[in-house]
Length: 392
Ligand code: PMP
Image (cartoon, rainbow, N blue to C red; front, side, top):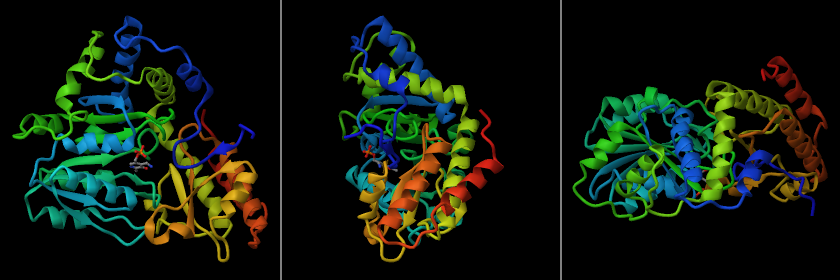
């Protein structure tokens, strides 16, 4: 089997060779000075990725779902009220996680492909008594981008803690944790951070830490307890050895390289690159006459696209696209699972990847018997890219 297939699912994503090389070096002792330097400096650097100068980073072995748990398990106590802004499957998962930690959960829903407006959240939060609100910045099931800034502003007004699931957004979509008043942002390594799966991240702001310290009951999850991890994270930053549970040392080597690359590009430049590639990809999709799941461009993610199959085509087209060298993902939003597919274009994705993916989609659709104007999607993407030349 060829190893050159272009992996363009919305996570895990393709990983750059220097990151892979870092992963393959022999493990170091997690208490060795060399590892302490790598991990300590990387923990510190993460504040610049989240734009959370006052944040307390937690970096632990686990997937994004663990990060989701770790984001709320330390804040919620039995009987607390939580509001979940629902933009799809992963928002609903957050509702389940909050319930598991004893919260009474209200979900603010929107029609499929739409995003609840801050005003609607304001109405619910005005009833009072809410401890926390979750927002999925990009719900990977629908490709819907939530208005984190507007929603967080409303929550702040009501003194409600804001927890953002940035698994499909962090390090690609514009996000300014401190400035926007977000208390916790969680993510995983396998998406726009451009590292293989296996690291869970939580960035907790000062209000979140204060709420944690004011708890009356112990955290129900042992592994997720900020109280057990915080001294370890702080020790690494102070270049001292510490241990609670073994860090994924090789993944941390990879993370160090990836974070250096991300910060060398710069956050605004990175957000802009993702916008440029997403706009180009979506112009190609429009030119092929395909409809997207997000109901309007302003609520469409820049990290991925969710696209309906044309009439007469089903998920078997993904096999034909794979035969053309590009791996895409099927649907996961239960109501439309078999009617759409998903494309990731985040991390180190570049203009050539966008064109390659559109070309493979065109040929795959043609092979599936759909009427396709071959080249129309690629040409539209080319025009879009040429209008906004690459800056780097
Ligand atoms: N939240 C979002 C928005 C996601 O896209 C995902 C994974 N696709 C998760 C949470 C869960 O992450 P993981 O699969 O790494 O547990």
